[in-house]
Length: 170
Image 1 (cartoon, helix red, strand yellow):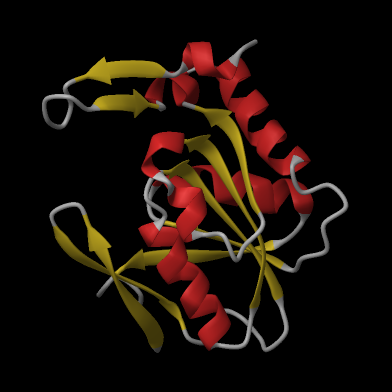
Image 2 (image 1 turned 90 degrees about the vertical axis):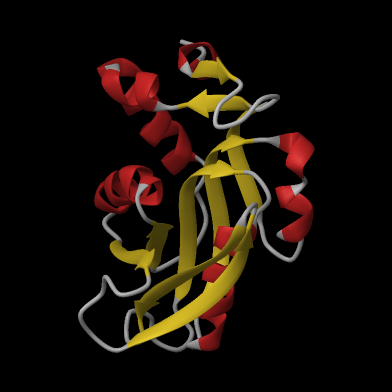
């Protein structure tokens, strides 16, 4: 199965000229979903790490089953105001403004190695902010794994200090 053939492309969404890569078709197909998660976790073979972190909500979709399969803990990174305990926050630029993400301050112990997982690498802003939070609390970003990479948006360049891996490239 070619996962790039299962991903639906929607032209002119959310605005004219944009080709939106819709993963709901992958999520709805049991075989495609298993292949996506398995392929992402296969990217981590031989890598030493302690935890998986993912930004809401799509980072949860791939990060939690990967953490489960690999018997690692999962760190949910959420929009500001959603976590109940002491948090660390980072602001980052969006196409139309700013966003703020946070994680629990005690989610990572000093020296723990963390894999970041998300559905899409576009400009890299979200995961750059996430990596900075990991490092601020003393963690180490072991790798970043993305289901889709939009190569024309140069997110990999923004994340050049990290080991970036992706499954499907457009």
